[in-house]
Image 1 (tube, rainbow, N blue to C red):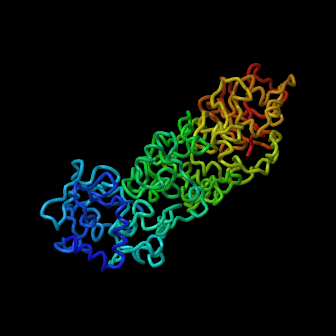
Image 2: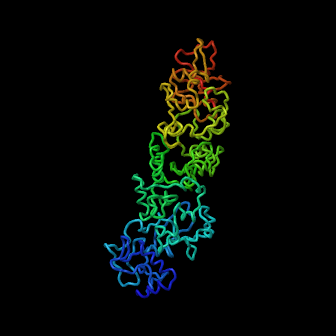
Image 3: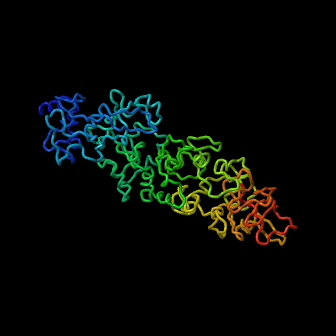
Length: 597
């Protein structure tokens, strides 16, 4: 037998070289092997897979007994276009050892199984033992042809893939498409170097990937982070890239994935993101932001992002990939209103101001509208309003009587309180108000974006939403970011004098009566009333005339019908006629034209 094997190695071109290469790899299961799994005395390294006589009937001259498993759990996902069946072809040969059900020394050319050292019989538990549940492994044994490429625009035409990746005679992708069992020069028996994910990108196409932040990033898994240590363990410890992985390997694994349908390393998507965005591997610590008092419910409603889910009315949840496309994201900071390829939110779906689904969104507000506009699962308002409307798309409509200038400049061109560089022709972003309270816009070092804040609802600065709090630069810091505090308190935007000539405008309401800005103003927009007037029903009830109403009758003129702080304002006009004596303690409330949009 030894003579025949020797003759085979000489006569078949390339076999001798391959056999020599195997000797120093984990596939040398003979007694001369350098790995932890090897035979007790067997010196023939080829016999564990091949033989000259008494083959199993499988090519090439297969010797190892095949697994009897016929019901492997195979990979599936909502985005998979290939028809994945039970493993067949050469993949069954690989699984005869790697599913862990057949003894490693069970070969057809020997009457008895080859004895292994240290009591080993089947493949030991670990990265190399795939088991019979392959749902967390890259799919195999499926036809990869032009029809599949036509159906899936994220894979290349198989006729153009790197020649190192070989399909079988039936055009099926098998284990040996990516792994060469005879050659381990690239680690993990890969057929080519996978540095910067070259092997992955030989088949896969991700729009926006080239030049993206993650395509050139690396993850130093030698970090002291416990989470990173777990990630390193999940990856094959034999990989030459364990200490420093790049590209796809930062988030994905080909075998034994934690989150199966996307082949993600960890079971929860955010765990992968936090492994880098933790203040150590990356300078910004996102994990801590999501633990703030007000945050997008990433940790409370954690779910894997499903690209095929209903983008508007899916189950209420937050996942990182709902707002960030990890394959298209760039490191460049957002400095414009656009969510294009120079943005951290590039390549994500959104909703237009007209209510149309967009893929991708082109403006920041379109991304926000996807969940905070027409979605049936949108959150309730923190303030009970006179006109109840939680659809942000409708609140910001340019046809409304008043609105903050998100979709376009506002209606009021007389806003003396605006702080430079803001003007009556300015437009704003959602993140001008909803942002991290420790982000760069407030002089902090925390990550920017509406991930979380100490101030609800994810406000960049404090805004007290209830009455009876003292006026201060801190309590109304969000409003004073754009509206000059001195101007507001000197009543430049709203002035109503009584008979004694005393000014009873903004200052009287905010300072003397401790009325919150939000008791009168709705920050987003109001269809029915000017100057963002939409009264808080916790404090404002109908007037004796049965109405809650503000009517603007021109610049700095209008009238109110309401009862507030126990005082009845029955169609009370502003400025007040000199013949009407106002209530000594409290005067009717009047909206700030300075807040008008």
